[in-house]
Length: 321
Image 1 (cartoon, one colour):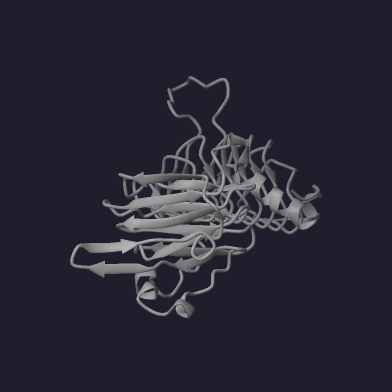
Image 2 (cartoon, rainbow, N blue to C red; image 1 turned 30 degrees about the horizontal axis):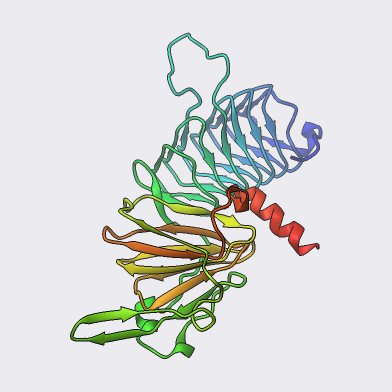
């Protein structure tokens, strides 16, 4: 949030009602907007026509709030957020006339997120950094960083700025090993696996040092996942993982803190190595999907990083070692 300056550095339309003096330089507040005295607005914000901002509201720098939006007590908007026209926020999960709760639910829109027109955001929700809420979505639970959500209730349909490998895994598996695309996430790699077919059926295998880049100490399987659910959403400090979709298909998002990939796993002939300090997400499970995961370590709760901000901080600290 910028240092607060006097209103001479702020444009306020003659038909706007601005009671707050805590507005950053370069901000613009347009006609018929109403900003209550306790609100705080950062630098270079753009508050459009017919916006209402209550007292306990904090808005960061370079935020755009389009027409017809009401920001109620408890809402926190971080830097570089876009809020489309007629987005609806609420701050009380069980509102009653003339009954004010002791404390309103806090809703947070993290830096760089965008909310499309006509979306509804339930109270107490956090929309993660870089996320995109599609037009008309009804958001009933937290949106992960960089996720794209749509629908009612909103569900994840993709990840922003995350390229999918151009060739599907099944097509690559049918080709030569040197056709396997390189991944951007640091240390992650696709590994073709052999397949032997005869009259008795098909067999696929992997050998340590040839196909598997580590010696497994543990395995687990994931299956019967509802198609709209998301799994993973964590990184490991030391553990390597090797993923094989033995049946059906699913998408895996990899994030090293700077670059991201999205990989469609749809063949038992391809394995995906996820090294430590890479954030992994699995979603878009087909109804028959069965995911086999080999791990280099036995389960250790302290090896997991489950908070994305903590993950980014750990990546940054590691880079400065």
